[in-house]
Length: 540
Ligand code: ADP
Ligand code: MG
Image (cartoon, rainbow, N blue to C red; front, side, top):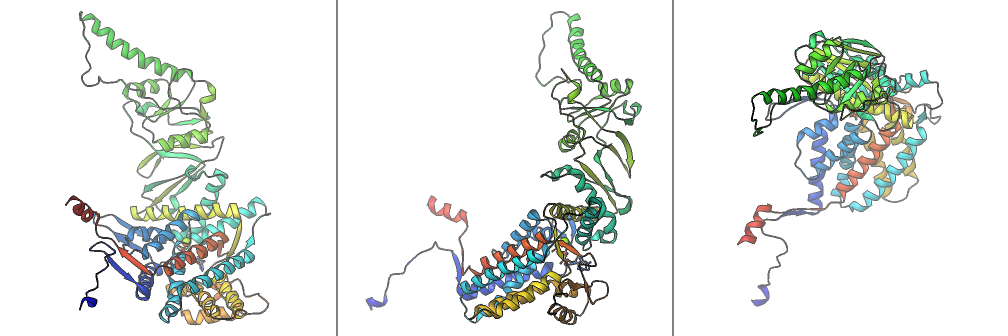
């Protein structure tokens, strides 16, 4: 009897929830597949969009994998990893976010039957890593460089890359228009990590085609005081003074106390205050500046004073806009008006305050140091412009990446089919179980062309068979063939300029494999009871 009463070993706190082993692994895989199923239908130029609304009534319409994943608020711990890789793909390369989620889930789906049959996850992980290494080598090999072309030619090629990114978005109908705009904007800021130098301003109303690029800075007219109407709104080559001070009569602070023994002294205090501000304004005028911007308020008095002297002013300019003006015009933001020398003033070829839709915009163009660009986006609904901004962001990132690395691969599933074929070939030389694992990895890569077909309503089996046949040609001439989104057949993606920067694919394969391996290596999840519970127990 005593032998049966073994003492119970208590390892974890009461209320801890654990699940482990094969069942746990399979359930994690299922969760990831479920997440991928959500974004699956958004892939490619014929992909659909998702409308997501939260309890606050905010509505977002998006086609961007990372945006959707972020908004979904996923709670499953394993599936959260997919959200993270989508986010990291977004910040690393800016595009390919849906691709990376689909690939990771497909790797897992292929791994599932093996796991169920009792294969040790470590064997799968090793083979998957190996396959991904080989795949990336192959992408690098297949990538074509656009280096060494003339500037015009390079611009043309870059806008092809941007157009491919944009083709899957809401603004895909105007992809050429926006692609060349994006290429110009990226060209304007030059190299270096100065992405914040491209401003995107959204003005509801008008059509997409009314969007325009300012080779410089543009921002919405700030709050203005009386006297503003009399200021000139247009200058050629003005000097620009940038300030971080208030040009306003200050009201007394609370509890300020001044004791006067003689009523006549009161006037002297008022005068002193007026003198201070007039002195400041005089100094601004003396500097020769024709445009005065300040991050802080420019009040009634100052506005009228400047108007009388044919000077344009704007107060409460947002800090990022002010910094962009500074960078573009070569000026420096001043914190005092004493000693405003010529060097701290900026200039530009053309300044104008102009009506855009219902808004008035201050536009500085033809800036000497270039290095900034502003895209003014027009369009119908708010959600539409928001999504357009996100799409342009993708395109901007892609053009920047392509400018830096300047190698591209054929899109439309062509590169995925080619790597898949290559891995299958390679796997034949491998003895043992690993052959199967690499084979299934290769098969998983076909998810991209298959999904492109599904989303366009084509017969995926048919198209994939044609693609496999083409890619199997021993001469290698079939390598650039991918899904033809217009006819439902196959076509040479490279010749049709469906290009993607190689770095997008490399990063996607890498991240997806890592995520899949990470999820495969987890065989137990432990859920700790709520923190408050711990405190309760301690308190007792
Ligand atoms: P992601 O978030 O992964 O970038 P997208 O919805 O942008 O997802 O779709 C990208 C996929 O669509 C890529 O595989 C790309 O090659 C493909 N694609 C883009 N434009 C075309 C096109 N005109 N024809 C065929 N495939 C295209
Ligand atoms: Mg994309």
